[in-house]
Length: 198
Image (cartoon, rainbow, N blue to C red):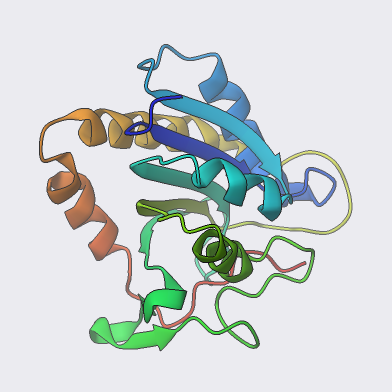
């Protein structure tokens, strides 16, 4: 692993239908031709494992997950997440800040993957998360069952392309202030960013 590299983390429960979106994207990316500085892994619902890996010093982490935001199933979102324990927040409508607190927040997850807790663990470890991007997909269903719905399965190739583009931009000098940052900001139009329906 390169301390200044990029971590691509697939997140979600493959036994809850479209919640397996992140795992499928990670699977396809693992077989892709990516720079040596890029690490791709499927973390499932193990926030602890992900936090420890992020503590290794990645400059950029790209999380890939099912993200219910009220759009059409298969819609992709690109969001940039701030570090809540440092006073950060998720941007809402018209740039309104939405605090990321553990209870009743956009970062609470019923099935165990709690990014707010994960970020706080990083703080305890004395590690900085670096830049954290979220590539999300609107699910059609997260009911029990294995396999993605047709609209979410159809969105996987585009998500793979988007992550590869973000990886390339992160590798360029000044990439964090380039097009990917502008695209991430453009995706922050809603007041809540739930990760899963549970």
